[in-house]
Image 1: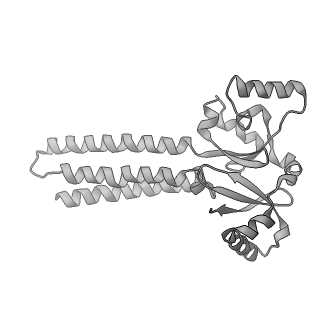
Image 2: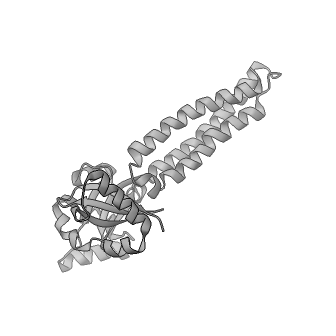
Image 3: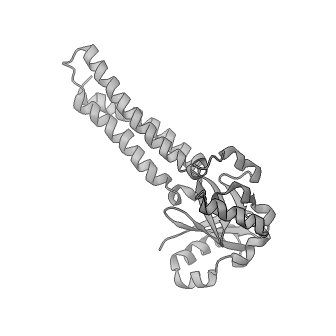
Length: 245
């Protein structure tokens, strides 16, 4: 096998593996619209550099048929170790930043990455009791009684835990949807000043055979993009619009 063929074979194997990882990221870890909004794409670009460039490039540089079989196998094992180690770090980072909850707090939805909750010793599996979607839709209930408010503020000031990371404030969104309706976006203003959003909304309405008033519109704050979430009047998440500024 020549050096070029060895690097090409390595690249082919890397493409197959990377394609599998990409499918898992897009379908399971970062479902639409979170792939671009919450950093899935940014993480994959780093992983691609490691898997599709670093490994095959090292093979191209090091592979030499003049070396003994033992020496050549040793070199390839070192390359594989470097590639797997770097790729494992990249995949672990992507996994830790995957959105596991979309919580409503202070008039907006906020995307919550797994690592943010795990850093506060919250088990991700515990979110399943609030809903079945991935990521789960959650309402953060601000305490109305003085004792509850003091407890929330204590966790903010002493434990440095934001309200939207406090599990004891979480409630199933479907049970509190009527409470968030007054905080929907002023879509009239947005459509007047953002032609891209207007075009995207008109496309959705045409495809779904819906009218403007058939949806409630809410803001989702994410790491890389802002999103407009479209909910039906019975509280079901139906669609979304990526806001491009």
